Image 1: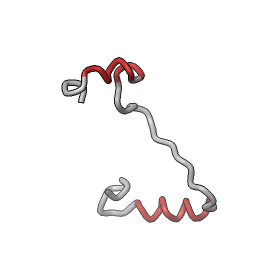
Image 2 (image 1 turned 30 degrees about the vertical axis):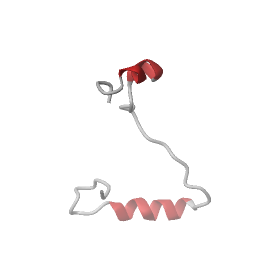
Image 3 (image 1 turned 180 degrees about the vertical axis):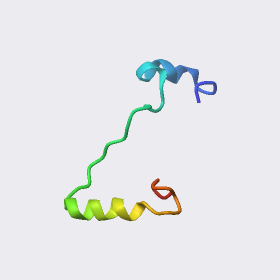
Image 4 (image 1 turned 135 degrees about the horizontal axis):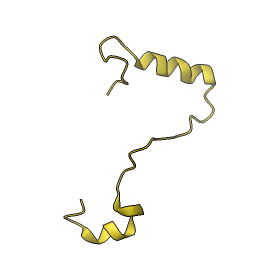
Amino acid sequence: WFKAYPETKAMLWGGHLWTPSYFMSTVGSMSKETVKKYVENQLTEYNDGRPRT
């Protein structure tokens, strides 16, 4: 990206497009139990505990 659009590097925080840390989002009005069930459903023996893609 920066090779094609070098002017954008100066506009971004430290010249980075993505952070190496974490992602956070809200779940709206879903209950804690609904979110827990969703997360548990994403973990399977076939993906070694990683979320489905």
